[in-house]
Length: 364
Ligand SMILES: C[S@@+](CC[C@H](N)C(=O)[O-])C[C@H]1O[C@@H](n2cnc3c(N)ncnc32)[C@H](O)[C@@H]1O
Image 1 (tube, helix red, strand yellow):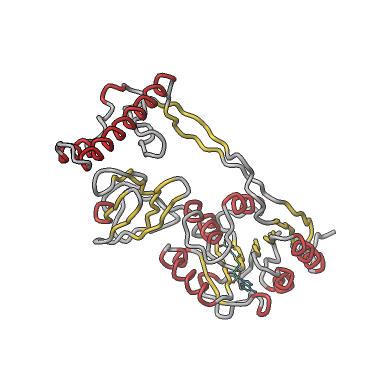
Image 2: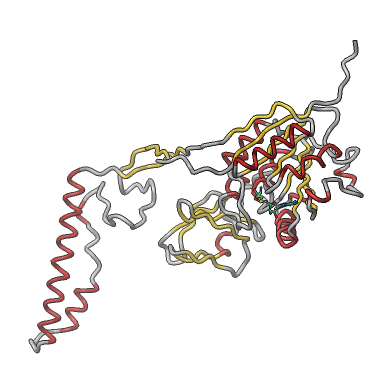
């Protein structure tokens, strides 16, 4: 399974991100005999095998559905198991773009945390780039390492090291040949640590001396920014600038078209079901009071399905609010709409950028 390439069909052992609803994305590894249980029904892994990524899958009993999505770093970020606070796509994409991370870049990242940003870096760097990720919390390091192994990152371009970078710095003895370019030789540094100012003095030994190196320190509070800026200045970094990303998401979707007659039909429907309920309860009471009547008939009336709204016509949503109608179902009329998030997400972090210029002597 790969975060680097797409494939069409789901096989046993693949990581699938099950889109259950907005904001509800569940990662699963397809395994024969397993079932994904959701409030919309059960979804057997056996049936997923051979389906196309992106396809809609109906529940075991024919109702309810999910979509089976191919993993990407962006989707992984919103579905991964949180072990720490993580970096989200509005920040990671901005940092990647601003620091010019591209195929072949050598990135130093500390700490690894939940590996959210690591996946975005790894995909962007491709086969020629390298990601050196550091994590000092041992259980978290081991979990991230296993995840990187399962997701193919370690086979392509990623090396994770168990290390306190503030104490021990970033140098790695016996670098595997695949990662060695006269040492680490990083072009880009990303620090998501509580005290980046204690790690900054160690960077000199591991960054490129022949190209411009960019750094971003990701800090949630301004006091941390202040200390990071001082450390950057003291250690020869320049072009220091701090920004905060405030993103608003736009979403396109289909909305069911309803008109006044639909509303009238719906009100009539609610009214008739209410009257029917009252009538049934009255009859049950009467029976209990000794009136001669057929209790079985009452139960049959109660369990009768609402008459499926046969004559209510196209355009009317028989289920009312809260029931799922498949978006775009041809039984109803739809229009394309866009929706913007009402509020800008609250503060995530301050991003402090700086650059180290190479020690290139310009000849006279
Ligand atoms: C906020 S998390 C990083 C989240 C990560 N950027 C992501 O997107 O998932 C910070 C991580 O840094 C680790 N950490 C803190 N101080 C460290 C240090 N001195 N050396 C290495 N890792 C450290 C913590 O254990 C934690 O897992």
